[in-house]
Amino acid sequence: MTQSSTSTPRTATPLLNRTVLISGASVAGPALALWLHRYGFAPTVVERAPELRTGGYKVDLRGISIDVCERMGILDDVRRHSTDMAGGSYVDGAGRTIAELPAEIFGGRVEGDDEIMRGELARIMYEKTRDDVEYLFGDSIAALDEDADGVTVTFESGTVRRFDLVVGADGLHSNTRRLVFGDEKQFTRHLGAYISIFTAPNDLRLDRWETYHALPGKLVCAYSSSGETSAKNFLVFRSPELAHDHRDVARQRQLLAEAFAGDGWEIPRMLQNARAADDFYFDSLTLIEMDRWSKGRVVLLGDAAHCASPASGQGTGLALTGAYVLAGELAAARGDHTAAYENYERVMRPGIEMNQRFAERFAKEMTVASRRGIAMRLWMLRVLPRTPWRNLVAKKIREDIQKAARAVPVKDYSEYAAGPTPLTA
Image (cartoon, rainbow, N blue to C red; front, top):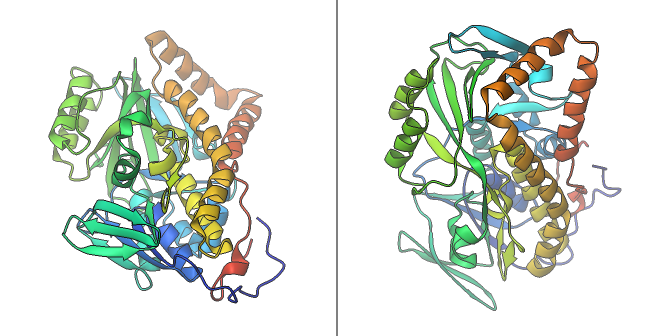
């Protein structure tokens, strides 16, 4: 990112399409709201949950997304709430350590990258925007009726309001996408595995550490990050698509229990933790692939448009970057949504496709199919720290990850800000 040669805001041409409804208050939605407000728009965020959702797993911020966090003015907050992981290990069924690696190899990060719990990032984004942005919790979009001048939005609460533009930042199972583009099945591609994550007691007494146990077609992990007294349990298993409703938590817990029935190590206790967790998450590793992310005045953002799945390790970074680009293109086009949406997609799509291919490869690597394959993987991890080529291997891993993390070539939109903007890139 390069600093603009001028710091004078463009205010001569009035904004078109100033009011923007954003569905979703996780990360992408509040990030977009922050930028839109900075450029002079009037954003409103609607969220189905009755309050801010602060659960979730640790998420990586790398490359361009770190630059975006700095421009947003939240990077110091992110640093303060870093997971600060020290490393990770693999154990056998008796809990004996088989392989152990420090964080710089285990996480594949370079200087400047960071990691934060998704809930902490959501809280930072909300606190940064709540004084300037209207939030509607406990409600959702029920119907959208677009005409030449705007969109009439009917909410599930019965409220009816008009907005110039609507943005769906409501995740893999986007309600906005369903209303405008149709059933999500036409856009999903299952990567052959399911993932579950939830908060659990720190029974292993982990301190900034993650401990993995691999079984054929399965991978489980417990980890605890900086400042946490609890832990996260993380379970992945290979499977064809399973019949379930993404809101039917009881059925999801049943599927998880069936997938790991009879397995050892800490898995029985993890399944007990899953039954008690109030932040239980279960879903498929799935890509969202669409020919277009917009229709008329409605546009999709983040996972709603192009989910790369947790296997990519870049979903949150892409959401932050997408919010930056979409808001910047709307500001550059002075609210002309047709031009802005086209430019937003042109900038983002090549990088999205690269990250989705990365996810496709890694989804297979997460769950090794055979015991022999697991033994080979663990042997490689065990001997890697003692080999003369360990630095070359770690460098190659980091280079591949950084290529994906910097795959979106974004520009500086600061000249369109409606007031002072702290840009330091």
